[in-house]
Image 1 (spheres, rainbow, N blue to C red):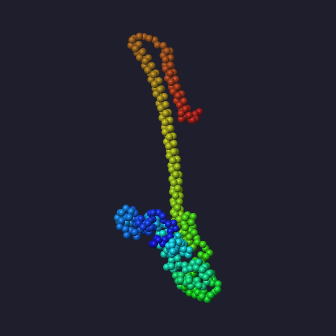
Image 2: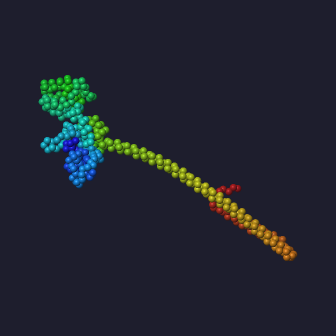
Image 3: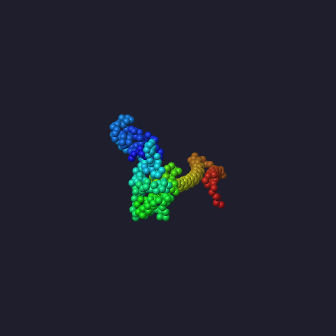
Length: 378
């Protein structure tokens, strides 16, 4: 593909798109082992790299850079013209107005309706009809050559929905014989005009070029028919593709957010269950501790009672020992039973007081401890 005759919407100014040897734009960037890129024409004539003198070997196509070059926007070949004086390439008024990517340029031009090889290419534009109407019969012979580029059999019918209700325009107000013959021959044989092409070109008198719906996003495409717009949106428009990708990503994000919400709700339920289990364990431990305390208090009371009984037994043993000693000494003594009774009563009184104090302490602990809220049974 000749890049010198390609008109880009925004000419690439980055050095990575330019050949390191001749400084022009590269069609197919070929990378050397020294990481410098050359075009396909320069790489054949070079033996070493002009920058670092490295030998040309292990060359390969830089696919990443090629994809970036293919995404550059340019005009169709049949929508530009070259100025014969200055050699400047500009857009053509009557040509194709499609803005396409450089990678799809060949595919578009092979199917372009302005390609003379294509049978569906329009024979005449609305400017041609206007000039024919203004200039008269002389213009018909001038425009007879492009008419032959779209031949059609006499049995063909128009696919346009409203073409059959249209009357042919009066191209010449003088109604000369040459124009009448030309129109009659056209109506009889249908060999010179393609009705669809005539309808499409004539409607351009009334309808302006349509912009791409993604114009606000930066798409510069303009089409004349709805089919052009649909084809552009389905295949060529990168803004439309980005919108579709963004829509898909938004769907994925919503799905992930729903999953996160479900996981959070399940986690909260698990936390509640864990807290309940912990509180139950704590309550069980408290009840066990209280039971142990009560058992210890009861055992202490029993020990105190046993100690008091042991002291009484000791006193009795002491008295018995004294009696035995006196009997052994063969001394006859008289004992006062009143004193003995008083001693026994005092010993019992002390033991009872101690036990009463301990019971009072136990009840005080119960009133201040976990048994404080218990109701006394009358």
